[in-house]
Length: 463
Figure 1 (cartoon, helix red, strand yellow):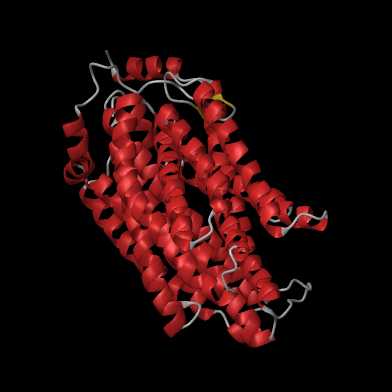
Figure 2 (figure 1 turned 180 degrees about the vertical axis):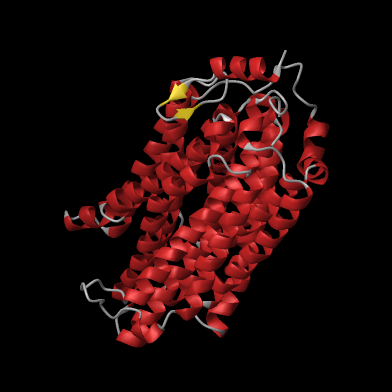
C-alpha cells in the first residue's frame, strides 16, 4: 500500500472532535471522559494543600511548625510516587488505563475520608502515603491517555486543551470548594474540625463519583491485543531500554525532570516568596501576606491558561524536538527573569492600581508562560515518542523522573530560598531548563525524528 493510501486509511479511522482529531479507535465519549479526568484529577490532588493546612490547625500543631510538617508530608508523597509511577505504567500496559485511573481516584477518595481523622503526625503521614498511591495511579494515567487519545497531527492542540482543563480544575476546586466551604460552615456554627471533615468528605465523594465516570467513559483494554501485549519482564526493561534506543525518549525524561519540578517550584516558592516579602517589606501579618503570595501564583497561573492555546497552535506542525527547544528556552527566560525583580517594590501598585509593580507583574506573567511551556514541550514529546504497546511503562518512567526532579528541586530550592533569596529557586530551575534546551539542540542535530505529518504517512504509523 502506498504512503498516500495508508495516510488516507488512517484519516478515515480518526474521529474529528471540533478542531482536533482523535487517534484511531477513540470515540468522542472517550475524549470527553479524558477531558473530565484532566479537569478533576489535577484539581482534586491540589486540594491536599488546603486540606493539610486545615488538618494541621485542627490537630493543634503550632503555625511555626507547619513548614516542617508540610516538608515531611511532601517527602512521603514523592517517595511513594517514585515507587508507584513505573509500577502503575506496567499495570496499565497489562490490564488497561481506565482500570488504573479509576482505582487511583477511588484510593485518593479513601485517603480524603481518613485525612481529617488523623490525631498524630505518624497517622497523617500514613494517610498521606495512601493518598500518594492513589495520586500516582491517577496522574500517571492522565499522561498515558494523552498519548493514547490524540492523533499526532492534533497532538499539541490536544495537550493544550487538556492543560486548560487542568488549570480550570485547579481554579474550581481551589476557589469554589477549598477556599469557601470550611469557612462557610464555621460561620454557620460548626467547629473547625467538623467543617474540615465535611469539606474532605465532599472531595472524597467527588473522587468516588469520578471513578465511576472514568470507568464508564474511558476506552477499556490496552492499545494492543492480548497476544500483542509485551511480557512483564519486557515492559520492566522498556522504561530504560527505550531511552537507550531512542534519544528523543531520553530527552523527554530530562524534560520531565525539570518540567514537573517547574510546576512544584512555582506553586511552592511563589507563595512563600510573596509571603516573605509581604511580612518583611510591608509589615503584614502571616494570613494577609500569604494572600499576596497567592496573588503571585494566581497571576502566573492566569498567564499559563492564556498562553497554552497559543503555544499549542504554534507547535502543532513543528518537529517535536524543535518544540522542546522553544519551550525550554521560554521556561529558562521565564524563571531566570525573576532575578531582576525588585523585592522592595514588588507590591507597589502600578499605574492602574493593580497590587503588583508593573515590573513584577510582567515578569511573573512571563514566569507562568515559561512554566507551562516546559510542561507542554515535555508532554508532547513523550506522548509522540512512547511506543504504543509499551506506552504505560515509558510514560511511567517519564513520571518517575519527574518525581525525582521534584524531590531534588524542592530540597535544593528550599536551601537556596533561605540562604540566597526568594528568586534563587526560580533561577536554579531556569538554569536547568537552559541545560535541557542545549541537550534538545544536540538531539535535534543528531536524531531529530519525524515531523508531525510523517506519523500519519505510514512510515511511523505503528509507534
